[in-house]
Length: 294
Length: 345
Image 1 (cartoon, rainbow over the protein chains, first blue to last red):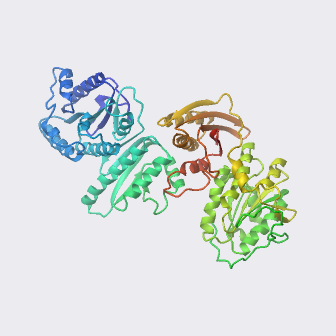
Image 2 (cartoon, rainbow over the protein chains, first blue to last red; image 1 turned 30 degrees about the vertical axis):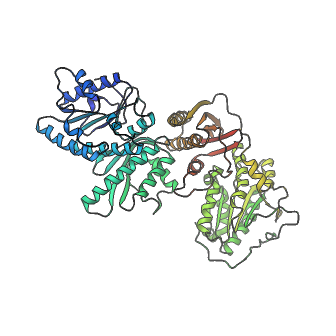
Image 3 (cartoon, rainbow over the protein chains, first blue to last red; image 1 turned 60 degrees about the vertical axis):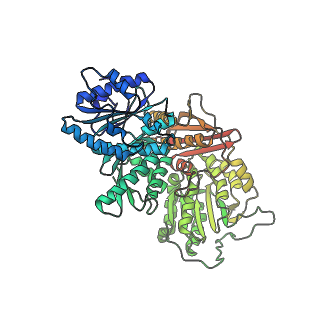
């Protein structure tokens, strides 16, 4: 299988996708979409995934390029068109139902290839925070259900800054010869969020939006589940290569703004992060409420 | 830190033994900074050091004033021995560590005063910033620091700082310029106004426009703009590896350069230029990074005062001063240059 891009875990290969993966894919041309969507679906079929394709004009693309011996069971399943844009929870419910059905039918699970242009069919153009919030929640639901979702963003429709920042909240990224987009943040389940990569001035806004979503959407369910007045959300920074002063302030502000209902615990942070955090004074009692654990 | 002393009665004045510390300035003296008395003490040899500093510290203890002494390690040992049991009532810090970069000393004094004299009660300090063994660049920054102390604390209510200078060991030019930077001088056992003190306004105007030594021809160069700070960081990492910086010091330098470059993006016209080179000196190899842009810094105290916890802006340059061995900021109508040095450990 050809190597088709980069990511923070490893160089991402389509044949290395695993259930629970939420993949961002930057698409520069129709030819690139054709080529990689063919690989993606063929690989899904080989792995025993039940395949779905979402988005405008994808019927033609997929029908034209799927190998003959493969079938596309539900290229435009009715259920996937039954919810509004940005309703991640509704999409998650469909994922859960379809995954259960697919497993019952003998498939490994569900693989969804989504041409995210369909979001733009619902004007006005969504602000960055809305897109990041949607993708963060979607990623968490995909991880919980154990589906595979590949989100294709076409550069002809989305501006480069938006694409770059939305890529940050996908655990993996596809796209030939693409430089790493900065940080990656995704849910690894049980109110634990992983942050890898680099946070700086260029992506601090996306980092804040991702944190807000994680803290808000992990916090409330955790309180309901446990009955506790304060929910604990864990942020694992073991893969954080760099964070600047703006990024650390962003983290402190996000934690402070979600108090007192959510307690943010930072785990596995690099030593330099802990040193800089203390130097900035964010470790002081009552400053922002972030607990730093080894 | 020392335990907070009991409140003092109004105007409990502390005349020094053997010298007229409380005498008002003569008719031709420069205006005395309100509440902040900043003195240079020129001494020769260890005996004169102890003879001048010990009474100053002793008076602070007798009056119940908090006192912080920041001098090189061997001088701390001298004072501890001379103070005997009273040494435990004094807070000491090694200037070679705390003040390695003079750009972070004002913040440390501010922390001391805020903690030990929060209500404006009297406090004292001893600071030997320009100690023998510093580099030429460091002496330049020590001089700027002494100017800036007057700017930073001129409205502090009751704060007395004595700055010893080893006149026997320092370059005569360094010693002579103490008369420009300190409103008061202690010489021959007496404290008097310095007739050569340049004053607050002139000092502030001159502080940010002072030339730096030229950049060597072999320096690597990289222009950057928004979204390209990773390239800046990668170039610094390459040089840090070449010079042999530890992982911690590499990380610190990378963060520092990133913060200055981010300021160029935000405030310096959206872009800037990084130049990096290696310098080998008697004390070891170092990485030097210079970031330039078209912006202009108006505040001579930039990066020298700890910003509030969630303040928007101002934290980056403060961190730069905390992390680097030396920080040199120059700014004028021609633009801004920030030069950072980090020595291999």
